[in-house]
Amino acid sequence: MTATITAEPLRADALNPSLTVSDLQTSLAWYRDVLGFEVQREMVRDGVLRAVAMTAGSVRFLLNQDDGAKGPNRPKGLCMSMNLVTRQSADAVAAHIKAHGGSLLSEPADMPWGMRVFRVADPDGYVFAVSQPLG
Image 1 (cartoon, rainbow, N blue to C red):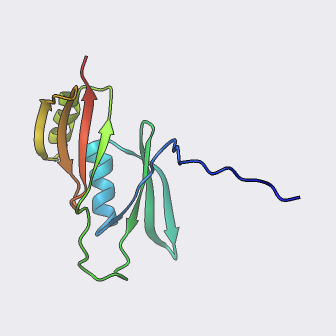
Image 2 (cartoon, rainbow, N blue to C red):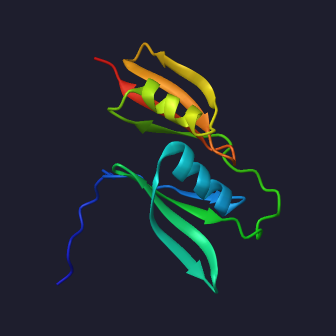
């Protein structure tokens, strides 16, 4: 007897991006020290750190060292941004970033869609909008 499969659209529970970075140690320090992410796991191969799993609350992602296979200067972080939604004060998070050596692409501002938002970019140009629901 053959099982019948009913097609259905995707309803994902999480998005956990994997970011290829130019310098893993630099990116690791930025995400940990500037944004405040925590290291969940380090992946070492042949005695070399190749990737780091990072977390902040329920957000999880992987930083991967670029191996140069697609060219030594391939662009990163272009044509997209990621939105990190938090119940924390956007102003307090922005202040933390600046106090730890980071700079903002835009200062926190109230948006017509009910969020207070600022933008920040990592060392490779990956852009994050940090959004706090208003009200």
